[in-house]
Image (cartoon, rainbow, N blue to C red; front, side):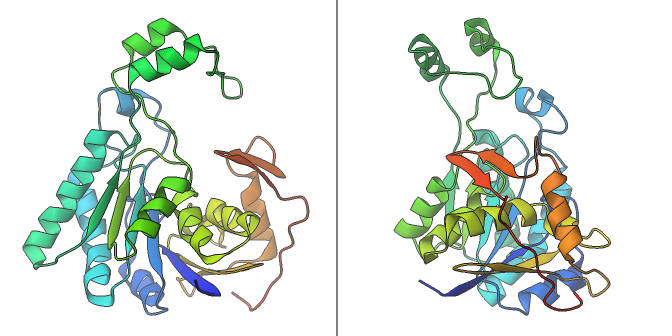
Length: 280
């Protein structure tokens, strides 16, 4: 258990491109992990249904080649959530296949964990019959016919599967997970180090978007997390984090900026404070 851990986010979504110089600047800070989200619901449900990945295999090869270099040579583990976009079983397997292609080409050896998020339709129908399925926000009531017509069903996992994998296999090099709440892998690592849950969920909700909280918006960001606080620094020297730019991120993709609902509970930000430590 560490008093301070560092997490590097190479980009908001895997496959969207990683600036190499900024990335290696972050790796030089000796982070405890690289964590990157692989999914988005922005394109709508068609990726889940077809199934298709969010970007091309070539885009994943490009980004992962950089990250796997750091994993192999600097021993910085990699945690990927919502693999391929929707995060179905086939996408998790696809992502590991891409990793294995690079590893074979470069002569790397990794210990990899897969975490699937697929849900059997019969489980959903049984839960509906027991009254355990309710709409999320403004979504319509789920119908039995919807379950039968769905080609793939995934559940949005929280932090516990990541924490379980890391607790049982502390020597893991890589985790590739299915559909997950975007901050979940960040939280899964932090909860093993005695950090206050409100701290790591708040941090994770910001940096899962990369350096979107910087001025100007960027890609690579380093988070330094302690028991009661966290620091954010974009890895591009031309970018900076300010109290306004970081606090403003609570307005992004939120129903309201002070109470953020996710798997397992609600993050209450009404007493959060934002302080400028340096110019950046």
